[in-house]
Length: 59
Image (cartoon, rainbow, N blue to C red; front, side, top):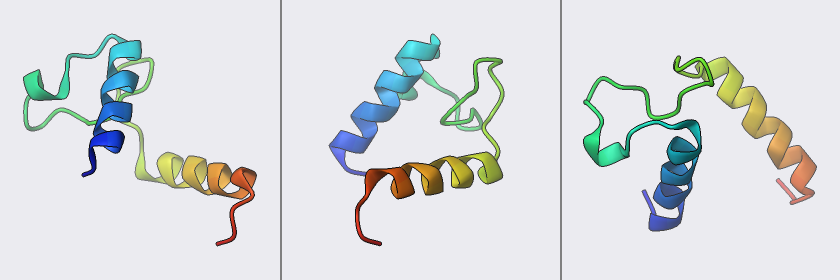
């Protein structure tokens, strides 16, 4: 993964109060909700699709 993507994930985890990626266990979810549960693949897919459409970039 590129450094910019990793930095974004680190910032997200920090904002949620989740330990840094380097300190996480191998089975811990990369992205967690405010209730500290893993995001579902369906939710992430829906969120990314919406963000791409709102960006106005040609896909």
